[in-house]
Figure 1 (tube, rainbow, N blue to C red):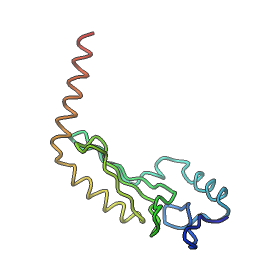
Figure 2 (figure 1 turned 90 degrees about the vertical axis):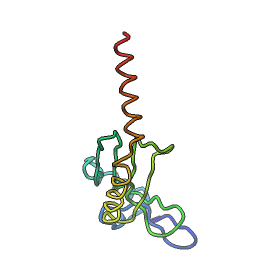
Figure 3 (figure 1 turned 180 degrees about the horizontal axis):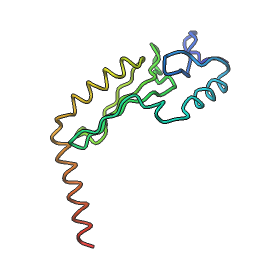
Figure 4 (figure 1 turned 60 degrees about the horizontal axis):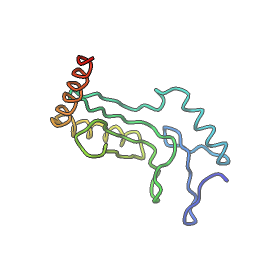
Length: 133
């Protein structure tokens, strides 16, 4: 089978970074996709470590993560160590969309003061634990 089918429409699962599809049966497409990930830099689109301890990372996924239909979602941006309860995540169809989303998330968390306070408290606790030894 060359794709995952949903609702009678052909659905491809594995993609190259430029958005083209890996063809062939599902196993061959998965193997070709995995081989294209030989270097971590091939997956990394953008990464920023902000002054307040927040990290924003955008990566190429290689596999369509749009399980509800619509265009394939093959890029993902996440922010880590934010003051939000859960680390935010957005997915995109193209590298251009992913880069724009990355910039938007960096701007959103650049001045996250609560994240900076949490990072400082974590550092203070770690130092205090080290001094107690």
